[in-house]
Amino acid sequence: MSHLPDHQVDALVKRINRIEGQIGGIKKMIIAEKPYDEIIIQLNSTRSAMQNISKLLLEAQADHSLLNVADGGSLDKEMEKLQKVIKQYNRMN
Image (cartoon, rainbow, N blue to C red; front, side, top):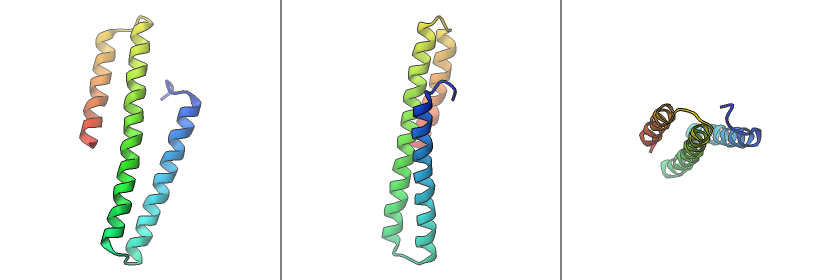
């Protein structure tokens, strides 16, 4: 991910850390036998947070591909990379 500026990497790591906290909270809820609807709410929140990270990475790949092509990179190669990321993104959503 060297194509992401450091501040973007830091922001993504912070998001991942929050998700880890959410997962830990969900685990505690299950152990404490909290109501299933409350657990599912937290699971949905975590899934949404993960989808947002996925979206940011898809956007970063698109930006990266466009910049590479503008700098003389291979359009075919960059399209292949972008299509691969889009396929993975669609599998998550």
